[in-house]
Length: 127
Image (tube, rainbow, N blue to C red; front, side, top):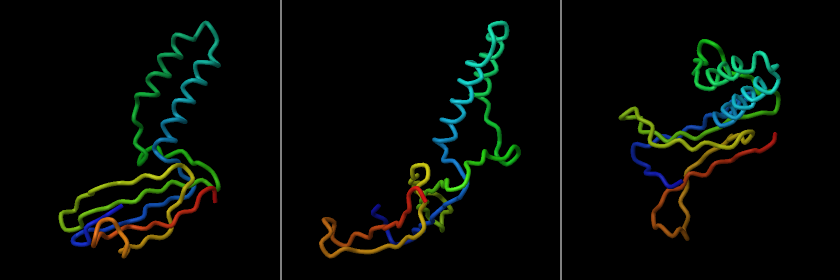
């Protein structure tokens, strides 16, 4: 990413034993499908309604906690922010199990954008 060096902060947000938001949604869909598939014929209509409600309910992770992904599972994102205005300018999300561990800003002499400042992120995948 190319960033402005004035009034810009860059943070790595990495968590172990955690699903990414995309993985959580995918897992939630899988659970709902399994609910319907394993229901017997006499309760299928009710289970379909429960599965639909399960998919639409937004359970606050602060109250109900988040599902644990297991060992060697990581979720990461980079947050570019303006600390003076206290606002997030951009969030760059990584795929499930790709962990960001180092970050720096640098300039390249042969950059196609003269004077551009780049964010370089060191990541590990399938750790």
